[in-house]
Length: 261
Image (cartoon, rainbow, N blue to C red):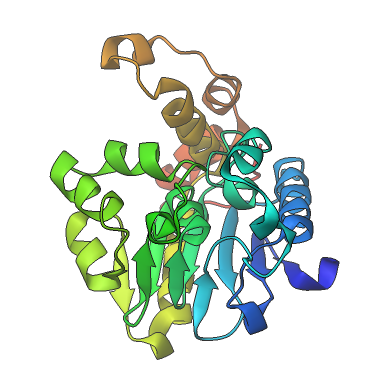
């Protein structure tokens, strides 16, 4: 079970890899359960300051549900009744993961894989990567957040153009739409991801946790109502050691060393 998802701590970075390349990193029930365990572990670990999620190999990030597994025997209603409240892979609808999450898209991100991408904060893709909410092409629906996430992030016609055709789109096309932050040649993917990670680690961890909570809790509110929010991470950041270190480092003209609290 645990062999199908690799979870490695690299300093303050958590690296999560769906390791099922023989099925293009499709997710079955056991893999989904393991991913949920990992996200919960990360949430409980204050030393994690950035997360990178990807798929094993060079062909696929994740192609969604494993259609060779028992999930294919379920009716649409049975699948809908058993939906994970945290979304596909425990990530696509998760609202409690307060650290920045980078999707390292190394190939196909289809169906639930695309929904996992929509659950990330930053998306870095290899130039050969393809994206799509392809469920309608097999008589299914992007139920794990795909429909509602996409229409919130894109203009209506662009979102519906993807949803109502189930077609695949290139990394370059989704970059133009604004769903992908950066597209690079495959051999430069790790370098690009590491650059984003370095920029995240240059920021105060308490500030980033506060920003993520503010975004999550403020979703759907007017700017005026969102401005009134007092989330736990916001209150902690305003009176944190990070805040004191940031000012001191600026005054002393040196890089800050973040305590992370």
